[in-house]
Image (cartoon, rainbow, N blue to C red):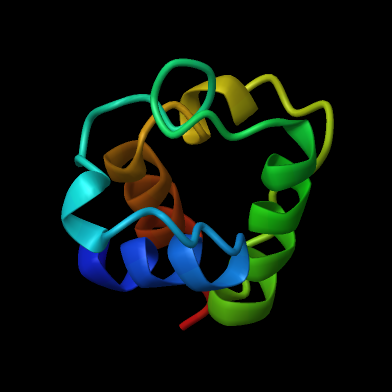
Length: 83
């Protein structure tokens, strides 16, 4: 799951200068980590819904945790994905 998410991040967010091994499991995706912004969060939420059937709603109190790292995003997807 983590490797698959790395590929999605790179491809869907057009992170041209980022290699999969650059994205660490528990490092922040936003701010100091990969430097993603709110537009990237919206795009990532759309990709997660399209790929895994998991909706991440704007304004959800859990979004900060969900998007805090690759491992947290993977946990959220695994817990909520369509079977």
